[in-house]
Length: 421
Image (cartoon, rainbow, N blue to C red; front, side, top):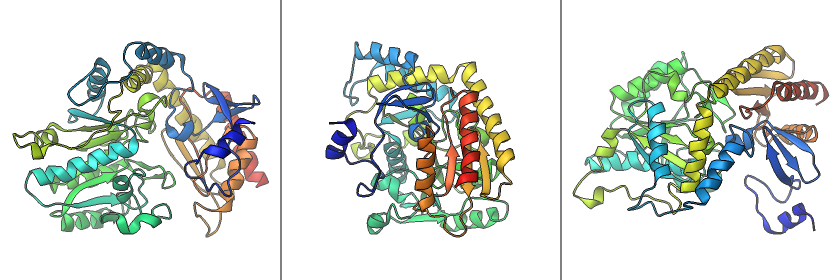
């Protein structure tokens, strides 16, 4: 029995309608920016395997550090205990984050990092004796699939079955020159009820790689600061170089109170979530009253093996060659976007750092469930490229180790698709 046949007997895949989906591709190994199936076919991983892989697959340095850690300590309960990897990772990350970030709280993934952040904000006000229970978020936001993370995400077909169970959230549009004053007025009117404002800085990934300018985000953040509203920057996707700087919040001068990380945190090696916060928020939970404790935790919180992967990934991320690769990809994307932007089938192109999105012209049908999505996905898969369109939006989000030749091949196949589909 083949691997695919065995899979279909026992596996339920994420974001997949199992009744109509094509059989999964059986991947057996990875190297650099590429993955290989059981028949030896090579696929360029142009989406970094759901945006997590920043240094390439099966990176020998990360593998070495993980192997060494497995021989020393695989796990220890993180309530009442600690270990070197968790402490060192927190120390090193806090040094390169905005200086107001002072404490690190570990969890399992991006959704749980957001859950922690939201609970921090809600309990912050509870501990202060103030009733602030509403949360501000952007339309089309995506912050995860657990209930709290889903609640602060935009309402869509993905949340429809659960809408009546999600807590109420105030949604606003992305800021721009035309609406920034109205948005600030909305925030001022709500400020006495708002526990926090959560946002994906500069790029809304799952929303369709929607991008907005740092200067308007900064203006909105400054206004929230003036109105005493806590801010959560969800950098699960945008962190670790994706926007051209180490973190998306490096593009603004105002800084959030809380930041969320996962995906690239371990270089895509394994699951790990991290939520950082200011000393002020941390201090609000310090008390002789045990009811002011942040009652949150996970069995695999600060897993030593995951921390070793994150430390190795951080070593690689801070190398000069990684920054050079980020700049190289950024410039390559820019040149390609200029080349195709006037094509009749391209509605618009948009780019932030290593993220390039191209919106395919489809008339009025721009749904995530557009049949064009499946056509494009299969077209590129047949060409040995993993691109996972968001409806009619193609995006390229490669590992930083991708070669110029591999990028050129992706671009050429997109141009070919524009002529053939």
